[in-house]
Amino acid sequence: LPWQIRVADEIPSTSDALRAYALDGGSHGQVLFAESQTAGRGRRENRWVAPRGLDLMFSLLLRPAEPMVLWPRLTTLAALAICRAVETELPLQPQIKWPNDVYLGGKKVSGLLAEAVNTPSGMAMVLGIGLNVNSRDFPGELATTATSLSQALPGTVLVRELDRQAIALSLLRELEAQFQRLAHGFTEVISDVRERSWLLQKQIRATVDGVEVYGRALDLSPEGHLILALADGTHRTLASADSVRQV
Ligand code: BTN
Image (tube, rainbow, N blue to C red; front, top):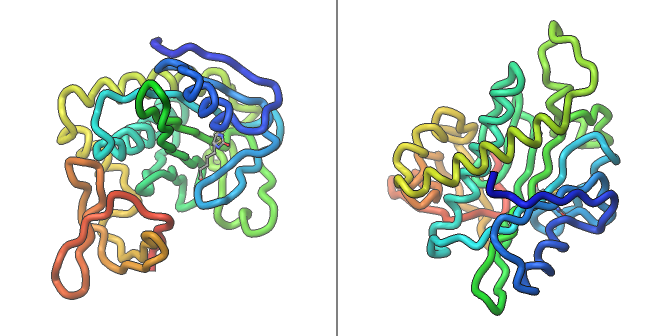
């Protein structure tokens, strides 16, 4: 694998650490896992809270060769990699919720945080991934919106603790394999994504820079952007969104 892997026991945030490392000239391919984060971040000022040692939390430092307009492809490929790794390891069928969540049975099992970092040696991308593996007791509202691999396993599958290391290795292997596909274009990737897409054909409300957009999720563009069919019959393409909900 092309990754250089480190594991921190406790750290504020793996993404913050790799951002600092990127600013310091850190090179492509660094991966940092944490057993526990004290200031884990989600998108939109959200916190990412996970119990120690049960789930997977890590970030990758990428120095993509692609122009920034194509970086959404990397997020999409990472979501696909998560799905493929889970499918390989377990009898589960995850779905991609554009732009950066992975769902199981309509609940969020994984979140991606893609951040650009302007470093002296060029633009870098820090991709943070949180995957709920063995967590089972989700507090408050999360009880209805979040799940874990272990919780989502069908009742007939006997669950002990799932092997996080095996899942992590499978994830890193898939991330490498999926990123390699960029060299061959995105068309073939999109069909794999379409098959696993939670959003496509649904009526949705997206928030983009504080503005709400309603439409039917039609397809993904070759850039990895979401194409919406609006009520007035026109199409609108979103490069990203702050939030996306089914309505
Ligand atoms: C989201 O769903 O909003 C994205 C969640 C991303 C969480 C991961 S955990 C590892 C990495 N470090 C962080 O502080 N956040 C990401």
